[in-house]
Structure formats: structure tokens, C-alpha cells
Image (tube, rainbow, N blue to C red; front, side, top):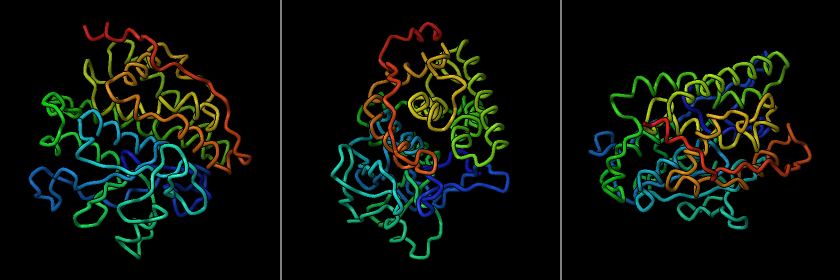
Length: 330
């Protein structure tokens, strides 16, 4: 299984969902299909260049959200453009529209649905039509649709195009912390990132009970770590933090209710909650969080879970309040 995964949605939307369930009713995420990489020197066949690459994303999707955060933190807004799909996923999958706030038409390829982008590259493609997608404008192909790999490309391979020298120096996967980051990712992904989906898309009580137990074991473990240090691997923000953040920022508004992850909310964890606020308040990150897209997508698209598409009113956690996490960096 992928160490990261990409967007998941209603299991009935078979042409768009990166999901399935096994005979035990357990949620199983499918592998990403396009795994080429962009390199600074072009040795991979895809050279990092300004305005050559384009992201197709959903603002609702936590996997796509990672790529937007790295793009922002590294100052790559002018170098890498992006298109935002409609938050509503129906039978045709992710679609393009300019009739909802924050959504955009596909001005690059003129597609009506994201599936057309995949089929443009491979008319025989049989996989899932997921976001994020990293598109090469020059060769007109999908380079990669695996979020964990896209964020590492943004982290190092586009340094020549970062807006400031300070952003060029930022490294969210430094050599001295790679083992620690990989170690954190190995349990955060299955227990928390994918764990919420394993709860929400469980098709048996046994599958749900197992998933919810592991989810809160993971959250408890993160809470303990964060009681002693500011971030997951120490005193600096890394890839591991960004990967966890996109789940945490959605948790209380969506996963707690919609995916039945209701043992506790993130606001009930003193350290996890302050940590979520800390990351939200990093320069540029707040602008990548669109709670309207997040809530409307999950509650209105997943009709097998929420058949009437009713979007609840809240809660309304204050991500901008003081968090006092800096004391742990001393």
C-alpha cells in the first residue's frame, strides 16, 4: 500500500474513488498509478522549470492539501499553477466548474471532468481518477499522482524558483531527520491519515472497531510526543507535520461526526490542538484551508454515509487563537 494515498470519496463513485473494501468490510486504499518524478537536473526526463508544471487539486482533499501547503511554504506560487475541482463529487467523479466559489475551469486541457485528464494520457487507463495530479504542460502528460512524492519534489527540486532565499533554504525532509520522519510516517499514515477513512468507510462492525481503536492509539501517541516537543521530530517543522496537519484540521468538523471518529475531538487534546493551531498559523498555510469546500464535499458527496447531504453547522474551532507552542522549542 502507498505510504500516502490520494483522495478518497464515496465508495459508490467507482470511477473516482481510490478505495475498496475487502471481505471483512475493511477499507482498502488503492495504489497511485503515475510515479515519475521531476528533478532539478532533468535526469528523470522531467526537468524542474518555472511555469512548466501544473497541479490539479481539490481543496477538500487532505492529500491534495499537502501539495498546496508545500507549494506555499517553499514560495512556488509563481512557478507552479493549479486548478481546483468542484467540491461536489457525483457519479462522474471530480469535475471542473467556475460556478462555485474557489472552483475553476480547466483552462489547460478544456476538460469537464478530471477523468478526461487521465484518459488523455492513457485511453486504456483502468485506475482511479484521483487528486492531486502533477501535470507537465510541455509533454502534456501526468507526471505523478502520489502526494507523498509530489511534496518531496516541491521540497528540493524547484529550489531555483523559490520566491525568497529563505524559502529556498527550507528543507522539510532534511538528511539528519529522514529516519525519524520516515518512522513517524509509518504509523501516522495507517493509524491517523488513512485511519479516519478506515473508520468512515468500514462496512462491518469488526472493521470499524479495529480502525477506531488504532486511530485513537495513534492520536494518543502523537499527543504524548507533542507534550514534550513542538513538532513530531523535534523543534522544526518537517514533512511529517504537514502530513498529519491536513488530517487534524479536518477532524473536528468532518471526521469526528461524518466518519464516526467520535471518541474525542482534537480540541480535547491540549497538545494536538495547540500543535494544529501552530501549523495553521505558519505563513501562508491558513489560505490553503477552505472549510467550506471541506465540509460540503464530505457531507454532500458521500451519500452512502449521509444520504440526505445535510451539512452540520459546526463546530467552529478557532485555529487563530494563541497556542504557546514556542515554549517547547527552547
